[in-house]
Length: 166
Image (cartoon, rainbow, N blue to C red; front, top):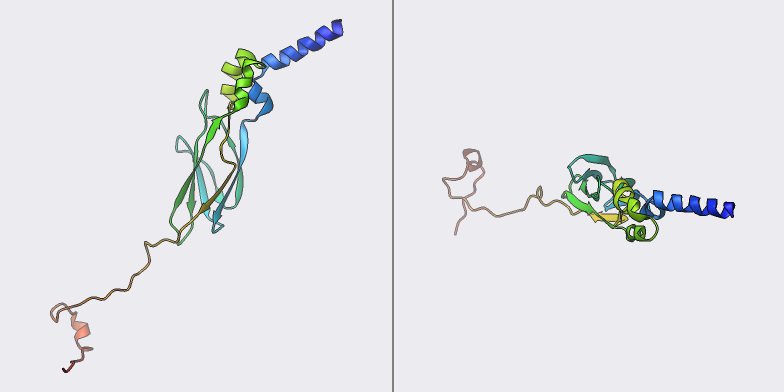
């Protein structure tokens, strides 16, 4: 009888001292980031604009799901590669369904304190990002036909002019 009571007491203590999402889920998630073409420079910033990672593709980075009490994390990945336009991709988190397990298993401590404080109440929305970079058109020279009057031609060009007969 005492063994059963002790086991039940320990189980209850474990359940009510942690949050349900904290037990089943996690607070840091791996994100796989790649680009086409590969080897692009990436910078990941959080929602406050602070750089949290710098590197190149492909990369796998662990990012926190929470950003303070009852606040989910948000990140932006910036892709840069010479000759290509700069690209941006968001990393979003959403509410973890296991958070609501606190109503049954974790109690109010898990619901209002543990999971919101650890960020376990949120989970990663996208686990893999493959961003396509496009060739930059800003530096491409386009051929064009220009028509000049005789007065617009620079003096150094005049020695190369050839008179055309009709």
